[in-house]
Image (cartoon, rainbow, N blue to C red; front, side, top):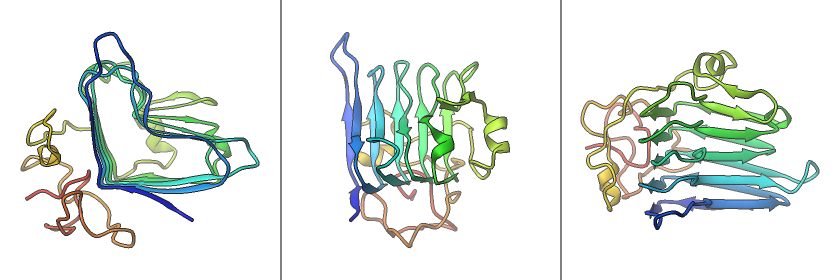
Length: 218
């Protein structure tokens, strides 16, 4: 069986002085498979908030996820945008991950060396202040910076340039469409084996190739 989480718009503004947890939160899995795509996570002023947090019960259980074409925009010194711990299989493609304020690692793995299969590519990462912050952390090798991460064979076709949306921090899904000329347009990989539309139901692709993130540009 596979759980599908798709085409959702998660927007949260935390009350003053509070922290967040996980928006999609899978704790102590005993044998789950997930397909997570076309979701928007917009956490404007929410510290320590994670869009996707997943872990399995122990090394004898199973947990796998395909994480495709999501848009994650965080602020206020966020936690890692994804926290993925001791999983079997993880495939992460065509996502846009933005830290609009502060700096923090984009994905926090634990026990990454024990994963059976990892395929991470065609994503777009950007931080307002990336200096001194690793892109990836892991309980084994701690921080891994961009050049070293790509040297391991991950995110070879990914980008770290600035990303511009129609209206960042807007309250509608369409606000998170990539602005004309953005590097993420037509830069994704074809995932039509899993889905063929964006979060608004628009057919993918509209141009020469798939856009990264939850929306196809006009």
